[in-house]
Length: 333
Ligand code: SAM
Ligand code: DTB
Ligand code: SF4
Image 1 (tube, rainbow, N blue to C red):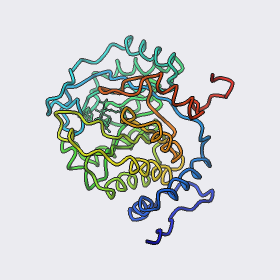
Image 2: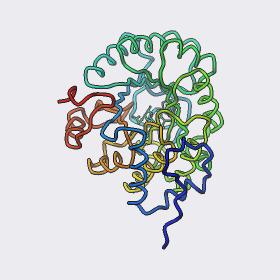
Image 3: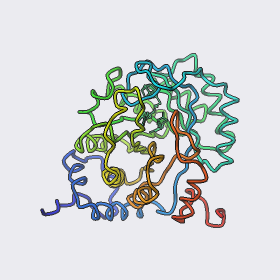
Image 4: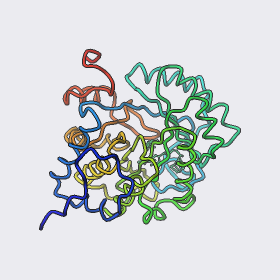
């Protein structure tokens, strides 16, 4: 079979926002080695390929969420092992962020199991953000849907990034969640962007979606008015008790393709291997870094599930001779 004509311009053209779904699908169909090679070339134009952006998550409010996202341990629609808890005190969050920084995190991401942010919670969330920022960390939050005025308040508090995922392509979305529309997600992203906060937006693979759905997600991201500054690709962490808990895992090479296509269509975005590293070999992660991934979560825990522990990740970075983004060689051991 002939390789499809590569619809990627490998010159120094600015990022495109006019990708068609067929073009994005065409990238997925490329021979694997061609795809990874092209993605690695584009990666090197925009980034030092030996550097990784390092983020750490904390669930600041866990469980009891009214939404029915079929992958999530925190939805009150499903019986899972996750124990619900109230919004943490700002001081406790700031103490956790201090530890994360000492452990090497560059960005601290605060997640809450909310459908949307309530105005009554804004002062405490703002105190968390400003306290974390004062430690010299980048700040990120993921709190559900936001209004434009709430986004402005979070910006004033010092929020650098807001995570709000599209999760999957628009055609598969209804199979995953029905309590919130795709358009509502896009509206929150608009509010975030217009408040001057950087967007962190990606999705999940391994939920039973097709390759066209995966291309559909990346097509949506690549045709936004501004590409997300951070682009997390989550490999589903299957949660017993959720509708998607028994999904067939996505083939590891397909995960690499997802990373490579994300790198090609959003060449300036920092692409994260988000959830799922816990069950990935170091060879698979290395292939993802070659294909353009340049961010990870560290610290042993995501929101309610496990992540590789710090020692494992330090060994991974040492093996691969990679280092945290923006650090000089002399700053690493
Ligand atoms: N409640 C907020 C919301 O959904 O807008 C913020 C927190 S929510 C847990 C953030 C994102 O984590 C989801 O959009 C989804 O992409 C990802 N996520 C949640 N559970 C996951 C799982 N089991 N495996 C992989 N990714 C997951
Ligand atoms: C993102 O894309 N992945 C993170 C973060 N943004 C909030 C969350 C992953 C959650 C994995 C399942 C859990 O730990 O509950
Ligand atoms: Fe709630 Fe977020 Fe989980 Fe959906 S992903 S159920 S909105 S916590």
